[in-house]
Every structure is written in C-alpha cells, then in structure tokens.
Image (cartoon, rainbow, N blue to C red):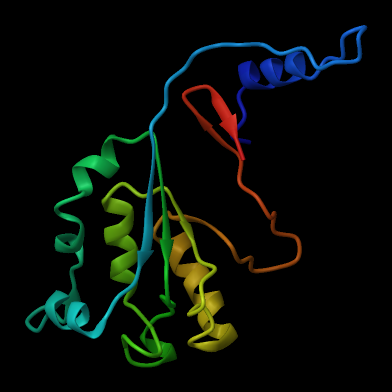
Length: 169
C-alpha cells in the first residue's frame, strides 16, 4: 500500500460534503518534480554500439549519459518505451521493423532514474503474446513499474504513487 496515513486523512477530509453540498477543499503546498521521457526505442545501430564482443553483453548506459542527471533529480520519472524486451529465447535482438530489445536496456532505463514505464505501444505485439509476458517479467526483474498492459485480469488498471506526501494515480 503506497498511501500513507497522512495522505488517507487528507483525502478523507477533502471529500467531506459540506451542508451546501459542495466538496470541502483543503489547500496545502508541497513541491514535487515529475519528468517524462517519450518513445524510448532501440534501433539496430544502438544494438551494435551497445554490444561488447568480449563480455557478450549489452550496455546502454551511454544512451542516457546526457539526461541522467536531470531524470535522477526528479521525484518521479515516467517513460514511454516501444517494442518488446522479451529476451533472446523469443528470438534475436532486432530493431526496425520488429523490435526485440535486450533486457539490459530496461536496467539502463532504471539506472537513469526512470520509475514507471508505459508499455502500450504499436510495437508491443512485435514478438506476440509471449513477448508481452516476457517484457512484463523483465520489467519486474529490473524493478521497473509499468502501465499500459497487464498480465492478468486481476491486475489493476492503475498505480497509486505517494511522492513526498502527495498521492496520485
């Protein structure tokens, strides 16, 4: 439960009807910084440049070197990502037109300061339903919360976040 006791009380207090049948409003000032990054997508050139032939691993940290300090300063950072991050067992890592990116990109996204990713894009089905489930698993494995798709009917359609005492959907 991401909602602290103070936030619950503020929400409860803000929703009390007055005798005039208007909602009572409580004002308080708190500052937060939210950043948003759009359309992170891995093309073939990035796959080539991030691959280390000696270690046989990918390192995408360089992709975020110019913006990491800004993303990390935010209280909350959201990013839209394109394609699947479904693992090599689904098929080779590829860019356009069928995207399957290494899970190492998710690690780099998290390390750059991103807290939440949107997975709903026109490329989420590039590796089929199995690609979706693997992408969800790989987000979970890398500590990235996600929205836009769910792995089952019981999953919530929303995420509540408490950022410096401010709770939001």
